[in-house]
Length: 350
Ligand code: SF4
Image (cartoon, rainbow, N blue to C red; front, side, top):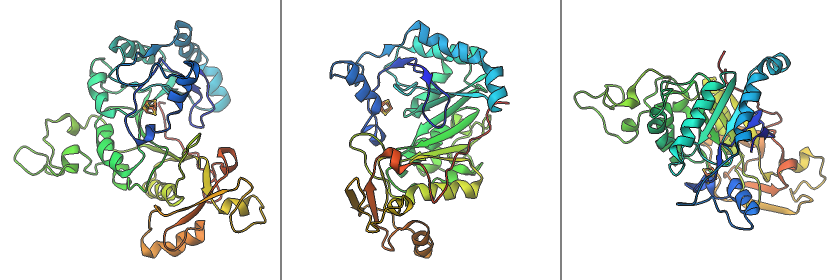
């Protein structure tokens, strides 16, 4: 369960256990569940409410210790620390996991200070409570805490919780991106992000004059920074993948650039815009590619009127906001956005 990873933004993947329950639209085509079923003779035995989670082997748990020891060699070769993605086949803050396993994981993170641990969760609402059960609640310097956000609803529900949770680096994995998302306010320090503000509960005695949350509420503790450090975006890949309107990642790229926040564009996924045909030297400018499929997206985001011409020039968006998409496969679709890759990272622990 641990390996040198093919994922663009990490060096290793470590799974302390396997198994999970679907919790949102980002889980619809869960790769990990399909994998679990494949190894389970067609049934995902570790998936769903009440299903047992499977702890990985002791030898797997020793691998991060070896990576940690190899720090000097890695740093000499790459000029940075190793990044470990935990967990690709589970969720660290799954409340159906034996709490002792999580404490073992937190102990392992403390024992490996040369590694940057990227904990990516879809259950940020559980994180503060579960971290408190361990004394690194104040924010371990080698932990990057990330949440999956696929639409505006999830952004407004979960980013305030992320910002209220201590971590050295806070990031968003916006994959598979399912709609246009405005995150500009969350990229700016001290923007009123708190849950009380988002829910409109504010302005009574004893409440924060800026955002309306009570000053004793953990959400207002200023012992940690209150903005997003890094954004990863990408489209969906694998069977049943849904297309991503090109305007959606462009919006994120532009919001990050305006706020000076690192942006990593991971992939288009299975689908890309019809410009692909021209970029690949295809003679058929109508956008019908050898793969044969295309889709006219009518759910596309309508950009503000004053941006439409610029967007149309940059990326073939129709002036009415619709987009012709082609299913060309993940490899062919690639990871270039408007002619270049975006591979920016935040600063980790020194
Ligand atoms: S949280 Fe992640 S691992 Fe769990 S079901 Fe959703 S996509 Fe799969």
